[in-house]
Image (tube, rainbow, N blue to C red; front, side, top):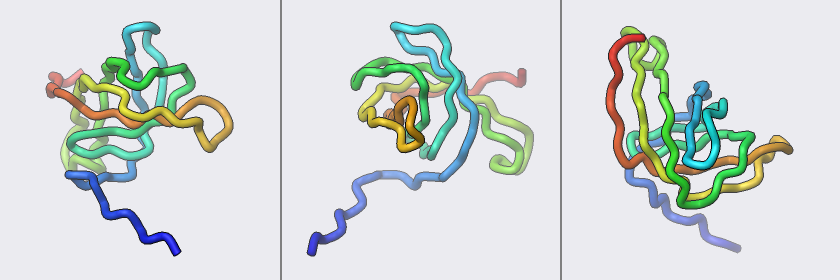
Length: 107
């Protein structure tokens, strides 16, 4: 019987379904939504093709029920590390590492 793989992630993931507007270098802005988020990475469902290694940019809005205060908007700069077919039948699931981020003023 196969042994479970040890966890390799350095930070805790949070299963959050949040809307995103993802920009990549080859396409414009495309809507998406997250599957899970951590301080160093993100996994999201996306209906546009993405290549591993692609630079991505998106604004993540953390809602009050997560922040326990007002909404917080975070612009993230990331790289696609893994792209898999979506189990939902269309689109892809993108796992990306967040290279840097900045907190935005209230919108």
